[in-house]
Length: 462
Image (cartoon, rainbow, N blue to C red; front, top):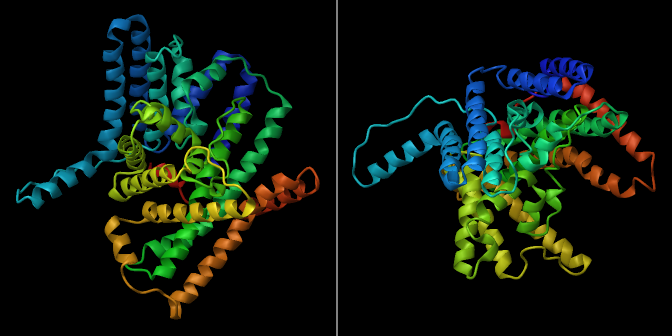
């Protein structure tokens, strides 16, 4: 069940009516918990077993850590092994098995292939990180465990953000689950712009741009210009697609009285790698910072070599989190090297260039670097990318040039609504009638495209 399905709209309408009809917090949470499991297990009911195991283990571990401090590390290890073990098996077993076989073959050893037909449970990467924040924070004495199992189970499985985030922290989201919620008009007022923008980004922009991206990246060896055009299209697609899911998740959660974290803040306006990661997939990048980068010593490095090691480790693992393939790891390491280079040049942290011209140059360089990263991210494999880049055909004439120009034209066209939105925020107070006009056009476009059939959200595969 995905947000763009008519089935989901019916499902949400039923949940919405029943939820506000019962009014009692406990009954509301039970309803949302049951609804979340129905949502998650709609296609594959066995998915619910995994999330239930994670929920029961971490609920029990949280209480055990708090009550038995002398064995807290043991109980935390149980949580880490259980959650990361399930994630590792379902997401990475075949990846590591294939690489071990290739390594053995490279040194002259013969090994029979060991692969399993494993189906990746949607959202497992997200709820694994979410529930781990609970046990780790209890271990760090930053919060106390919850004794209400229903409330905790809802924290792990809350359906609007279950499949692709944002990743909520227990300290922030559990108090909302535990509080009394009453309907008020402000919820609708704050929710509908998010929902409209979510559908606009997904069904109007991302799904249509995806057609051009897929055609380029399915070619055996595209020309360099065609590859650049397809990558620019993917830059638009992945932002529109992923931020669309966040907008919809936040919008539907608002209609139920919950406030989810902001996950994007104009990432393509970033002027440095650090700035980009403060703007892109914020809930994930902050999780990596607080639970991986800082524990590894990233906040107190005393040498460039250690800083490079910690950054490459954290970003390399974050790349692997996105998918069981070397090009995802390469994407993470690439961003780690960008962070290191900018840091060495004195442009790390919250560096700000002086003057408009310097800022424009800084933005242009970072935007180019971001696109190179997306090329690594979207490539079917590292071999494919190396073959495409080193193929020698620039594509400056003939059908390749025509196709590239067409793609760039469509990219510009579908980028206009995204570029118009930041501008709208700047002039809204001076020209108040622009916002109603913008959203009227957006609603009209969504109505036209919503029933045309769409694609899964990109981050469903992670």
